[in-house]
Image (cartoon, rainbow, N blue to C red; front, side, top):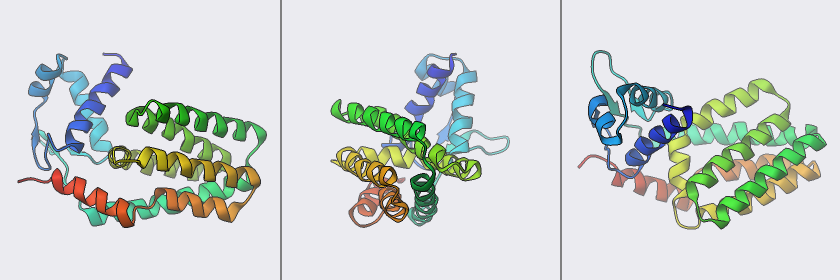
Length: 219
């Protein structure tokens, strides 16, 4: 199976988990999934390994994989750490970004605009990933970029879930405008602040996330 197709399988399983079709603690049988998607067990195993690395699935020795259970409190803690790392990346980018870095960031932002115009939350998510990677690159701190990308992958399913909330894509795009402006102007403190606000979940966003997790909880 080609890498792109394998990624689509992973995303399909992940989506079923996010919308509650596959519930926390539910067993994920490789043979059943392979039959349902019309593929061999090898790409299913690869998809489950990818989901396990993101913490969405738990792989238990000598047993089938199961959908992971992650508390809302743990998620909030992880988003708080990610907000701090992203803020630092933005602060450094505002001080260090080259013209090439800014060209990459602006191009990524424009692709986000195109995805938003199509009202495609999943496409927006992947363009949003490239937008944030452009910020990490502009920070010129490789270790920080590695840590940001690691946590970004760990929180991927929950960030995808957030983008499905009403008006979240439009709000995210407006926040991107402020981020680009802060970095372009060299305002390090502003870049730090707007990026932290962009990532951190609080208020209505917290309530939306808790509601979605509750809907996906076991009956």
